[in-house]
Image (tube, rainbow, N blue to C red):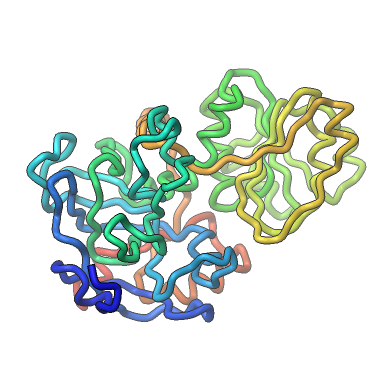
Length: 362
């Protein structure tokens, strides 16, 4: 594949989306192309796509590996429009999801254990290089082509719009709760930050039978957390007295905040032998308090999305327990305003682009 070809001509299938051309992160219409449906590929008409905070980080190249022009979007739901000759899981007309990744080596230990997300050669759904050398483009677009292994069967009773953010925000919080054994009834779980990730973390933890404490810098979120989302208690992280009173009470904490913030107050909330699990991808290093970790045998760890098997399990669990994101559905041409609002945390709690209806008139 000639690297010099333009995005519009490098593949045979015409595609349309919205892209940012540089770190100004300003989006505008973009003509490009998708590969022809291979023997194990499915082509999907995109209906909805969630707007993840990492879309903003990537559009501004805050993590340093963005390839412009960028078409973000990795919380994609839609309908299968074409299947390759060797596809076994899907047929035309099926409702499906595509999440944060579209490829991995399929041979290493991580892939063999259904942990494709930890494969050293995993391929992101957007702004990554596919096996043919071309750049991947995400769900802010009319269609996507993906290997069936990286496509999720969509449960009939799960809404395609409000369910879309589960493909990133859902699996990002579900996976560490499961991995660290925090999915058992009666545990006390902390959730730091009540944004796109945090509000879904609360819903999963409650469905597992946990008592949930939301930890936030803002008292304004207390009513929303306790009355609407069902959290059992609420802590303002700047209230030293309340934080001290809650010291040593939590079995685990999911920290969803991507802004710089102190970790010591959170570590102090943990019971001994417990984990503070970081899932918010901030670009600045944080200070790690050593002595409280040592004296409590506590740990700070990270977790990134989940493998395909676990993502399917999560979506099925969400459908069974009626879990989906609280969303504000927007047209595609609202995306620049949406990003401005997202930076100010002015959304409850996830923007979802109504892609299909946005592109009808294009």
